[in-house]
Length: 126
Image (cartoon, rainbow, N blue to C red):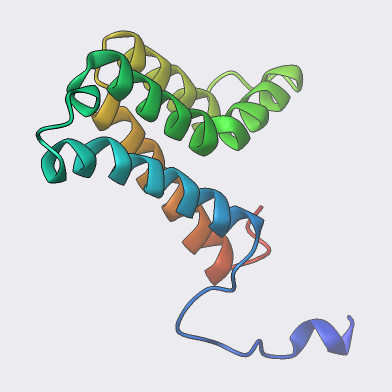
């Protein structure tokens, strides 16, 4: 057994910034754009257009779900039919096709935040 693996990690209050946290931040930013812009600027009609909402939430959805979809496809290649990545991918695609754009994007954001915090808390999980 290696003595280096038994060293205690320095615990911090917040997880370190990295590519995964920046992806979550970008997705959250697009969610805020889609929700807050129509409220702050009610006179600007483009922010109330359905295509604008779909576009903003679709961009947030792609940013947040890309890694989940990649893991789902790799799980399918390995023969795993019912892992969490495949299930959240199917559920989110179904919700997006049913036009629950803000709900599904927020579910994906919360799922990604949960994964990030879990991995930050226990880096050997994945």
